[in-house]
Length: 135
Image 1: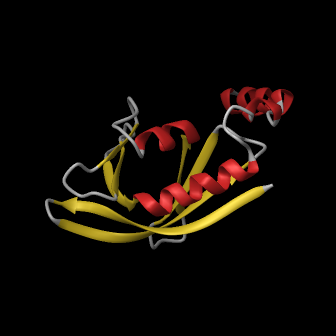
Image 2 (image 1 turned 45 degrees about the vertical axis):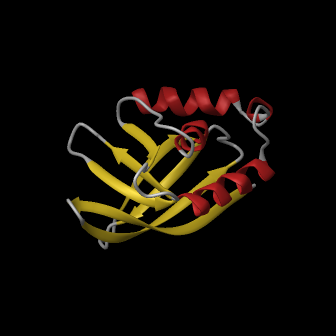
């Protein structure tokens, strides 16, 4: 079972300047630990990120994440979540509506309850994908 949801994030261009960007959030019980974000850049190619479902949930409550992905509530803007993506090639910060993200997460929990992810993991498929990517 899969879940797709459309949202608008605000990309922080500079202090106080934002650009609205469409984002498709995807969840698939065959990959129960992850949430995919597909950013519509206005070009024919979408920018895809995969983040941990638990990281997203934790980031709704407190600053979470290390390295490439950091998520936190904005203390000066209740109801707003800040998502920072820091790949080796650059950095982007987005703001999103906390209630919409929570609704999406709650819908994923209807598909696979927290703590039950291991029941949906296909270890053979996951190992196959990992080994193929390294080749």
